Length: 386
Image (cartoon, rainbow, N blue to C red):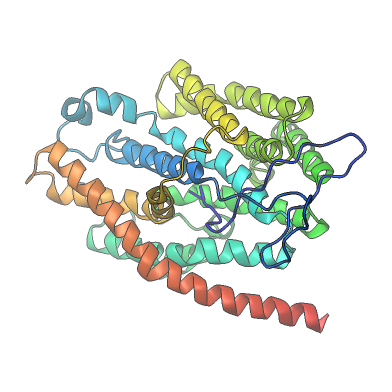
């Protein structure tokens, strides 16, 4: 996932508790002079724990699709082949919910102090390079190992835009649905970024989006429900509020936003659990654990996570998420008769991780770097022309 997706170079700012009557301070931006003696300290290193959590969320989704085996790709029953691991993997779809919480936290963090043009550039260069490659790879795999309707050129072109939902075109990989949800969040948040992020404005944004997500489903308009991401908004809103807690310090108001988002999420989980054919109670426990872990992140309880490999692990998340389902299922279909299930799934996940690393190093980084330079220059031209 999108993102759920991240802004790799973003650092976590020092907590600045709000004092009555005092406006929250915006952290010093990279490249500006260091603060004078007695001024607020510079931003601290990035929250590496988020990289680890992202990879954990991605692996949950991988387990759900490849071991939970919702579509029955294994010749023998996956429940028979993997036993209790299969039962646990059936809950792996909840990794998406963790992605959404992290996305709310990270997007708010990365957008603070940026212009809307910079925010636009950061999202485009983060999302599209690996995605374009994944779409072409997925299309190639579906042509070589057909599953369902034959892939059409129109579908490939539509998926390359990442706007296939709006174009009425199917997702070549069903995992791509989360990118539409992320895109809706980015568009909403870009409006706020254009106005300039502030503590007051972000809290108001959380309140308005919460109210809209509660009212819109009552109107019965499916298109509008999807536009406001009513089924998923509580996770993004919780992530945003948790970032405000991390940045400005805890307050009853912010904890109330998080608590309300948690309650809304739990009340909507029965439908999700029923759709995924799993029990509600474990689903609610897992989602609650996500909220608790992210609350600990907001309170800086994971400052001890400093290992450099965690950042590398986080870089694998997005490419892994994009390629694992279609490619992984195709490999299982073709190879399962030759290897025992545990050997096959272990080797497959290892190969997917290696492929994700190669996509990151050979595709994502160089293309993103080039795109960032070009788009940044384009944004400067737009500003100067106006």
